[in-house]
View (tube, rainbow, N blue to C red):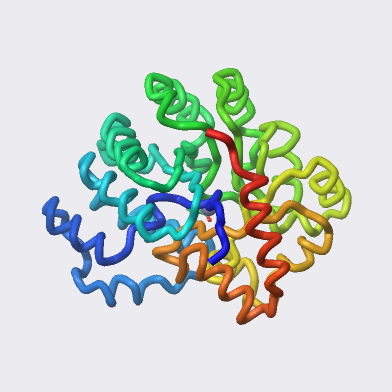
Length: 303
Ligand code: HPA
Ligand code: ZN
């Protein structure tokens, strides 16, 4: 297996049904079903929101520092990567009464105990607005040494990057890296805003950037990485099938594309599964896959 870096991975999206059940039992949380296959059977998504609804619902089982530790330790053990930059969604836990201290405590301890070099990127839930994002960033600054950057995720359309200018400016002032989901369901205008207004160093997803030749040229010239997630795009119906994926065309355009797993517990595979499916379903060559893997190291942040 070729060495790879994972740059687009939501730790809450690695919550496998088996762990949902185990943590629900441990914490006395009621679930609609305790049958892992019945849980998995619900993962038939029609768009981003239909996934997010279940993703947030399942998080109810994450309560204690040990839960967050177990979640991250399980991911790092099976990730198959040599470097991991891991997103987490503190607001999804704060709204359930789980304090930042618990989230940072569990995740940071698991990263420290792992052999895989890994770091955290704190994401803001764009559908909860800019004011709350700023409050969360300020509340997280006492944990500044536990995360290397900030990101922007959750429901995209209707929540353009420009809303978050101030909080990203504050993050930049703190020396934090900046990334944002853009161009997954939103159009190229969301990618332009992420670059020009949020000053992001990487674009998460970004597949719809391909609709705008001037944007493609800009990203090629500035070597701005895109963290593409092929299996996620199929499962959330951003593309009809893997064979329709625009990733080979992105490589042909000379873009700095990487392949990532996004929410592997929900989308049918970890990073290596994404590479395998690109080869088997899309006919990508070993040379192309080697390039994607090399790109993942070029696009990584140092920590
Ligand atoms: N897009 C937006 N928000 C998310 C995603 C995604 O693919 N995964 C987890 N939160
Ligand atoms: Zn994502």
